[in-house]
Image (tube, rainbow, N blue to C red; front, side):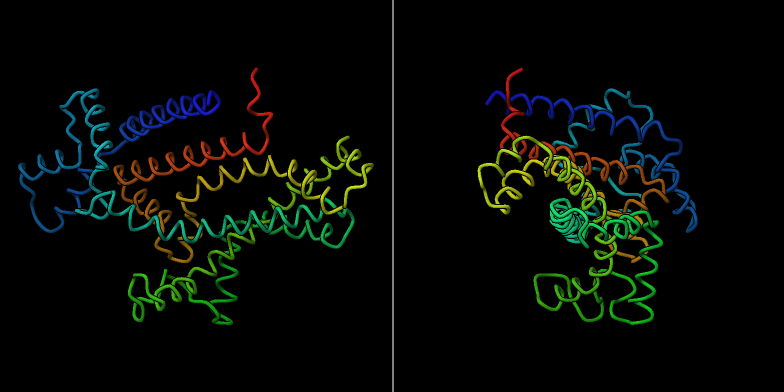
Length: 329
């Protein structure tokens, strides 16, 4: 219980610091979201002073209010789940925009990240266990794909499988003419088809890192004394590989996987832009283009919460997997 209480206290302090930074950083940026919105509105006609005042109050851009009061109001709005109004998608709320984009990103980036980790760790275990094998010699090829610029790999796959072979669609999240979003087979089938190529791009570019890292950790672990002792006891090679070598070698990979999983909600801006995928990365790109500070702030907050949450869970699981991390100092 003491170990859990220490972790809860640490992440509570980290969350408070993240919320505070998330409040102050957008206010240090140049520009005013209200001015941007007014510039768009003035293209259709003059805007009254009352409208300007209303927009400033609505978007929380009242510069006459003390900063501390704004901070207290910001924390109160967060407690109610109010993230403000988006300038890019006005008059839609930030919560609405994020709520619409996150399922697409979690489905795409989440599944691709998990598959990359599983394939990379599994193949890395075998490559480290049988050094010099064919699988071990394939590692330079996988690391080469990792070194290829992300957008370049996406464009190549899009050209080959989308334009030349016409196996997958060129853009979008689903067929807007044939499928209606919801829990129905037509929509699910369409979403899987449209998401396959972006997911394949992520897997190809990231699996090499997991494979190489796990392979090197396996090689290092196999030289430990407890592996020699297990072999001397006559344990089966499979048991030594899985219960002794792989279990200890995967711990650093597990920590890295937690961080990657936390960043799933941030999406992949490059991939989502190339494939015009309606995820959170696309929304963040739009918010950046329009200086939509409320939407950027909301997205950064969701990313922070996801990273802290996944790391907290993995810290607890890490303590269960390796009891030495719970040892009193």
